[in-house]
Image 1 (cartoon, rainbow, N blue to C red):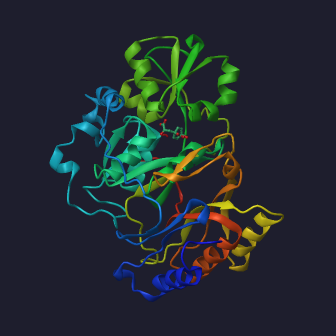
Image 2 (cartoon, rainbow, N blue to C red):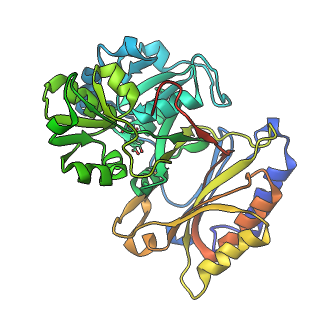
Image 3 (spheres, helix red, strand yellow):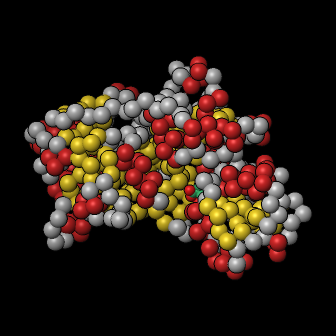
Length: 407
Ligand SMILES: O=C(O)C(=O)C[C@]1(C(=O)O)C=C[C@@H](O)C=C1
């Protein structure tokens, strides 16, 4: 890989930084390699961002919650007493810019603010509460808003669903990871048990249409086909439940959680309606700063995105790098190339076009960037790639049941 500047020096610096410093000295393990094609590369330390660049880099634009998010706030008002949730704009200004540093927190922190998409009763909210049981959850209308809320210091973390055992990878969310400079600091694998919800007293036979988030509808595809109902898209499962409750339509159901039924006063007409019983969604926890692997004995994994060079057997060679390092892969997935022109790191330089997207891969492997074998593998990987980005090293998550009732 042709890196700008002297590649040898870059390699030496990288290895030395990771191996040579104590974990309290702010060692760097979050590396962003970029090829000459994109005319820059970045080296990210804990809180310190060192760049070598020949092209101007656009900083994060201030995020001002707009009309879209006000709608979310309207939707959530009046529900705050039902969960440990606050709507984004309702936070007092001093709380939004709290000087608290939660970056090293893993759980049980009273003050951790975690942004999630949707309203109380959403699965993303459940994932946030699994990761940080005493957190304050903060509703956002879109997934992108959750990431922006972290960047703007409005919250400490964001949760982002990234893949589901039935539906597979959520590619648009990988795109969000690429276009924002956040770090993955954890994962939550949540057992999702969808329920069919309806107004109080309604029976299954009365339901002619069902509302939900597209992922939830897809996960219940066979059940919904058997019922012969019309599917209606909603921004979120909990929003669907809230709409059914507020519109008072007896013939409309919602696919959502048992907790959503409780919050919005709906009946559960059927439980576990997903096509496959073992329906697990994996959520990522995102933070401004990366975590330092190796503080405890837990196993870690690392997520990366890379674009392969062209040539025969290049994927084989790239994978061999991990085999040689005795590193187990838990995921490898190629980006569907129908989506194109993606901004990387907020920069207009180096936007990735369809040609490169075809060669873009997402990978998770079982090692942390504090381990020499992982550092070695990534340095070696550069030989076969045009672009590599480390999204983060974080403790491996286990499958979680919901905190309350059936999810
Ligand atoms: O709609 C919700 O409640 C969400 O949290 C979103 C979401 C998703 O995007 O995958 C989360 C988990 C389930 O897989 C279904 C929907």
